Length: 499
Ligand SMILES: Cc1cc2nc3c(=O)[nH]c(=O)nc-3n(C[C@H](O)[C@H](O)[C@H](O)COP(=O)(O)OP(=O)(O)OC[C@H]3O[C@@H](n4cnc5c(N)ncnc54)[C@H](O)[C@@H]3O)c2cc1C
Image 1 (tube, rainbow, N blue to C red):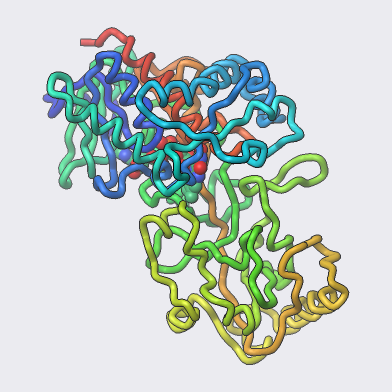
Image 2: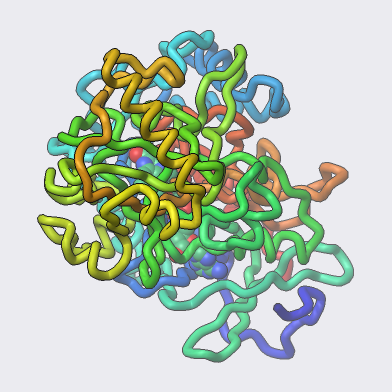
């Protein structure tokens, strides 16, 4: 990355506002700033057909809260001991109550999820009645909310007088910072292998998502994760964190993420495969357990976590992930249809990767994703576990299943012993939807230094430096993209150009 203090001799492009990353947050910032009269350039790393980041492959729900006081209570309670300044909570609550109204004003068609109470992730927390989840359009189908965001942005890109310019396959690589004022005055990006510079007369907004695909950051920042993969966009590599750090930004919420879950990470595929047998609401025929590095079970395999967190001793903690982790199962489950859950209408692997898993799992057995053995000794040796421990774990599970009760972890679904040979295993990896950490922002969506002072003309929105510090309420990330996207868009548009 270039030195932010090196000012280009000549700028390749000039605009008022540069927005880096075209997902939900990039949409909200760009459209807001554009509609307030600013000239906007929106940079996107992915090609046009793969833009949209996690927003594109999300389950498409967004929160629009009801009742500001309840919203303040609920959002405060979600933070728990991981406190967020009360002024931030107030602004967050206020804006989250306006999401539906705003999208309607732009021509959207917000539809509330059929069973709103079902969407409240922490109903026991104060103010939880404020939660209302929406999606775009009559049919709750794949991609509808993203399609609206994309259409609204592209509509503005067509406007003759003051078009919003979208540059695909143009990753932001670094910020340009004035030596005199410390303000951000432009961006360096990469286009067709060449470095280009864009002067931002008003400011720059970072909306380039989290670090879901940056294993170095995952190891350093996520608690207890030697590695972790994603079901979201492979383009989110923590670039906004690197760019922010280079100009003196503080970081926050780096240890918070929407995960972990356990899925298959197969070589050659950037994102993970969800296993049907592990889905909390699905039953499959056959016996199955999940074991950790010590060959023992460590959780209820069918538990519905709160986006990866489970209640423990009066608090919530991430699901343990004693890697390497293996799903062990019998021939009946192997024969019970595809192990891969192809049907969820969210996630990069299903929506964009479109991998064609075989109906009888034979293709995946042949390519080594599934291992098979005639006895537990051979299976254990194949996956580097102690044969005695594996045998004793299975015997213990089968004994509990004869009594019809998982006394160890209280599992309620697929209570069947591991049946006849051959036996199988699939290695599972920790996986997540998205990270929440990044450059710290204030109530004006300005990115701040460790002493809390704003870095002039630099803003953010979305999951990059998300406000979620602890517990996560589903549909809250896209809700936040809209809320802080509008704040960032308004504030940057109001600035007087520096030149
Ligand atoms: C499977 C799944 C389901 C989910 N379901 C929901 C849901 O229903 N509701 C909800 O609220 N949340 C959901 N989430 C979380 C939510 O999708 C994200 O947190 C949110 O969409 C993030 O939006 P964003 O704009 O901040 O980032 P993204 O949507 O990820 O967009 C970031 C964009 O920046 C681009 N980019 C990255 N680096 C650069 C760079 N250097 N230069 C230029 N561009 C760059 C990326 O290509 C990407 O297009 C889900 C996530 C997943 C993975």
